[in-house]
Picture 1 (tube, one colour):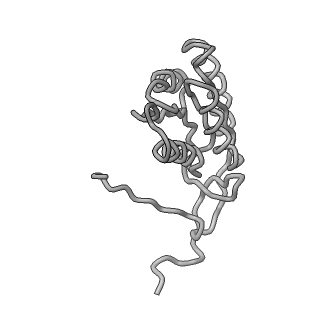
Picture 2 (picture 1 turned 60 degrees about the horizontal axis):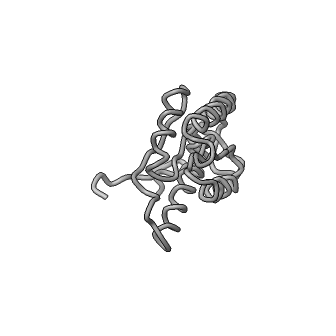
Length: 158
């Protein structure tokens, strides 16, 4: 016996990879704790964005670093995210995460602080974030079958 009527629908944002989100966030994703300040500065400057700061990224190696990259790519690939601005210290890590998120087909761009400095990086990332907010605002919800709704729960202790 099913609790949910299989003919039920909901309104969501269908992404290029076919997944559906109920939110349409434009996230500013720092790659490590050194990039948090720049990401938060962009989110403060550009209404409609949200930074996802975290204390990780530096002094991680091997499987731990791989998990870090997969986690960041997963956050940016989430169907509730409409577009992503990635900010890292150096271009190699930034490109790795941007390329991973880009596989979903969603708009993503990355900026490396090294070689450009904080101020220029924040200015360039803010410009991209503003364009992504305009893009996300223009997206329309579509009616989707309830079978395409993914529900996740979070334990407050883990």
